[in-house]
Length: 207
Image 1 (cartoon, rainbow, N blue to C red):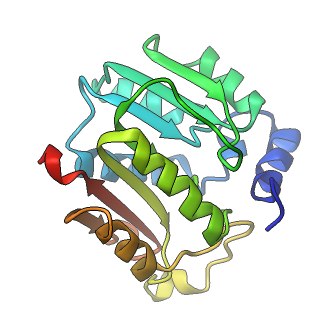
Image 2: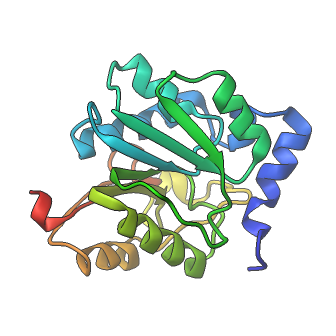
């Protein structure tokens, strides 16, 4: 995959629809919220935690946490699309901060985070870029990493679904990747009948 190609569909969506939900390429606000709920449950909540949201889009996860009264002590969202970051800054809780960062490029952070979250972020990346991004995410967290992706183990009603610019990742490969880093790994895939999977990895010393 050429550098930056994973962002082409998102750039096109911003150009067509403007910044906001439509530019995230989520199927619906309901499935977006469902995925957020699974992430929160698997992490045990984020109240008082330091959270890094990689591929934050229009800032929906920060707004969702605010609506749940699950306020992190610090929250930073990174996204490659400037229009989406500006949208997030204009319509998010005062405790949330955002930066324009292309995760496919070299990037560094001055701060440490308890949890790193990726929701929908990996869907248009190839395996090489997914591994690079997840490795950087794992190195940035002190408690754990939780991420979702379109799984290659969907039930029948999802197996023929048109994914557009997105692609399915091999569940077993990324589960093994997680187990190589910690013995504290959990997964869920029942919430959308296998169409989507979420992996949560905790650092063993945090448990």
